[in-house]
Length: 339
Ligand SMILES: NC(=O)C1=CN([C@@H]2O[C@H](COP(=O)(O)OP(=O)(O)OC[C@H]3O[C@@H](n4cnc5c(N)ncnc54)[C@H](OP(=O)(O)O)[C@@H]3O)[C@@H](O)[C@H]2O)C=CC1
Ligand SMILES: O=C(CO)COP(=O)(O)O
Image (cartoon, rainbow, N blue to C red; front, side, top):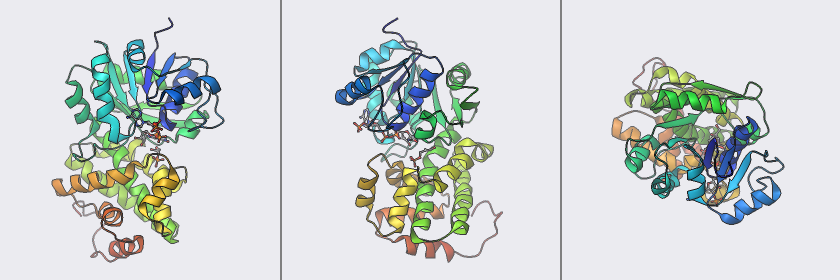
């Protein structure tokens, strides 16, 4: 019993801990692995993750674990919740330690740095095609989930049995509503692109623009996400769900979003590095803007908001210049889906 678990979570930051709390609160024995042994010792001692989710008690069924081999041997269900820039590295560390019957799901939102690949491709490249794969996506601030506030998410993957098992593991009639979805690509893409649009909404608010501008960015952000998704074989309807509209509204409108706060700081005139340091946690959209922008270029998909965020982050443009450029674009039909 000691070394078995219903699920193992890799990544003991905000969201890994929140998902582990939620799973353990559902009555599932959950191992939570983190790469920093000192941090794991603190979790064991405090029965809380004071560094990332202060004040929230870890349920008894959540077991912090510093040894990766022990964590991976404990369960066949492996939930990866590390930032996208270390996703491939963590999988390659895990590979020799995985069980024959392992099944891999991630809640990481982003694309692989430099290549811009979906994390599904990274996982297939690292692990081959023998393990079922899945993704969790949707509007979920770690703090609210960990506090047991009502939340809804979506799950999709390569294997229907695994997807359904995840729905059942995660679902709680009191706190967490989980939807199975069959669009693996769409769920991954929504989680990556919303980070970029949340930065743009933050910039707009940081400049001092109002609700009209923010809402226009959400709406046109959804349009450009949908265009990219269609070019990549995702289903249009996915973007009207949790991983599209849902996550865009959440992260573009609430200051719990680190991407939005990053944009706010830039809009108020702070520099990129200073803004990142101040947030002190992962801002996925910083790196991912580059990858989403490059992906759109490669596929010939027009993504004007992403392009302007890219100009600010990587080419020295200012948020105001970005806003002016967006506003001054040639007049178009709203329903012209190619533009
Ligand atoms: N927070 C949220 O509300 C949500 C987050 N997500 C996604 O979850 C992913 C993780 O984000 P989140 O938990 O918020 O980020 P945090 O910044 O809160 O935590 C990241 C965690 O990853 C750890 N980490 C860094 N490098 C490695 C590594 N090489 N091996 C193992 N662990 C490592 C960090 O450890 P250390 O501190 O030692 O660097 C830290 O514990 C992101 O893709 C994010 O978009 C998705 C939905 C909601
Ligand atoms: O993905 C998230 C909520 O769904 C978290 O957003 P941030 O990474 O912007 O904090």
